[in-house]
Amino acid sequence: MGRGRPRSVERRRAILDAAAELALGSQTLPTMDAIATRAGVSRTTLYKWWPSSAAVLLEGLLERFHASIEFDDDLPVRAALTAQVDALVHLLRDTPAGRLLRQLMSASITDAATATALLDQWMEPRRHAAIHHLERGMTIGEIRPGTDTALVVDALFAPAYHRLIWGHAPLDDDLAEHVCALVWPAITT
Amino acid sequence: MGRGRPRSVERRRAILDAAAELALGSQTLPTMDAIATRAGVSRTTLYKWWPSSAAVLLEGLLERFHASIEFDDDLPVRAALTAQVDALVHLLRDTPAGRLLRQLMSASITDAATATALLDQWMEPRRHAAIHHLERGMTIGEIRPGTDTALVVDALFAPAYHRLIWGHAPLDDDLAEHVCALVWPAITT
Image (tube, rainbow over all chains, first blue to last red; front, side, top):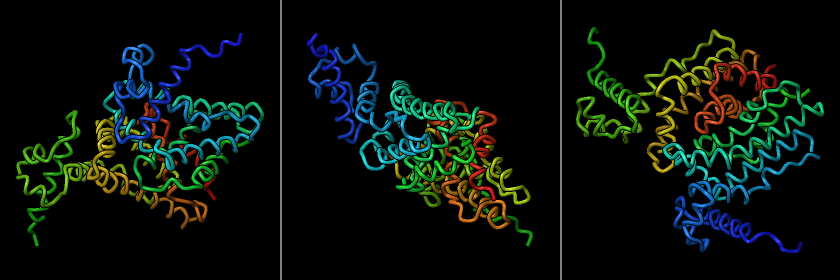
């Protein structure tokens, strides 16, 4: 009816933007106070919508980097999964998201709110997107029926996180392609 | 000539034992002071041999869990690698090493000494053992020549660390076998 989006939706989005920018632009994890100040809202408003600073900023990151897990069902399954792993590699290597994710993973070990937000807002949407492609692959006959999708997703994505955390080997330009090539013969029809 | 091991070797081993036991038995990472007290030596002695508490305790863990990365060149390569991944899964899931490793990985993000000790005393010996088997496999014709051993090792071992850190999926009894099965068709001759 020409009313546009409700005001609360725009306010919510402004807060998520503020949280993401603050987190990506500073060396430490932002507090609820810092996010409230940056977004120009009260702490009470923030706590009405999110239980923790980790929850706000991870939802902000999910919005910000949503393109890296968009479904593209026109691509062959292997190309779609390679693109998703490649987007992760670039995100972790070429943007402040890599440093930020390391900080969040570190914090998650002692802070349950951070652990929950990381799983809900970072890991699960990414796993869901990848599992979607594998299931699509089983439906259209590109992927072997009965494939353990949870395991395949871990095998495809874990090496990038592993190299980010340990730093023992680089996040190469061809990492995504090579990881997919390593797994593919076992799951292709 | 019947003299046994030098005294310093035994003293060193006693310190490593003390560090490993302290780390595995408490909820926080031990300080140099705590390790010195437990081992009955001075801080000066400790710092003469090791640069940081992380270095002592990770060398202690390496001694303690050395069996989990022993070479066994009589096994077929796939069996040897499956056994090594399986030993890691059990170590991370069924012993206090899992909790301890999460603490160390968390600390390593802000503490360079911990990061160095983790790489030198945990990751590199394990990677070296696995790469040894892959190279042996290329020599005896079980593994495809030109295989990217660094990538294969990450693909085999990263899922276990990934599940330890994120907690999104269990460290199953059959994880090692299934991960090896997923990678094998791409690397076997």
